[in-house]
Image 1 (cartoon, helix red, strand yellow):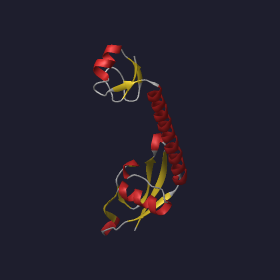
Image 2: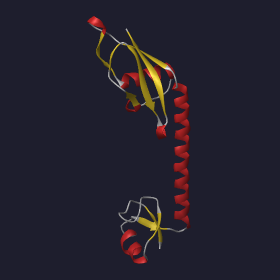
Image 3: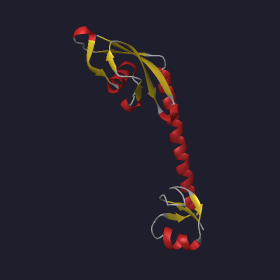
Image 4: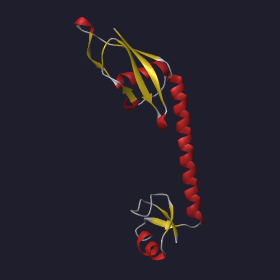
Length: 147
């Protein structure tokens, strides 16, 4: 019997998959526990629509990530920081501050967890930061820390 899984079932398959199981297993275990539903025309149509929606979502997020990466590619983000004696910055410049400045200066929304710094920024100067987007798309921005 062909069934569409509504939840992950160990050793059978993952949610949303169409699998072929024995009639007794489907009728006595999967269907009563609402782990699967019979693969009739309506269920197959819902499965195809869900797959199409997922593919569309991936496509739009990838296009948006590419556009954001192109908008930031090779750009310079300027951050002002306070310093004490000897030109040492109070604290450090964090990924959160870089993400906020990217949004202010270029209007591109970036999650602070997606900004990757090679080392801590604790002094004035120019640094490289990698900004990761959806699906492995990334770009590098220059971060200029000034007083």
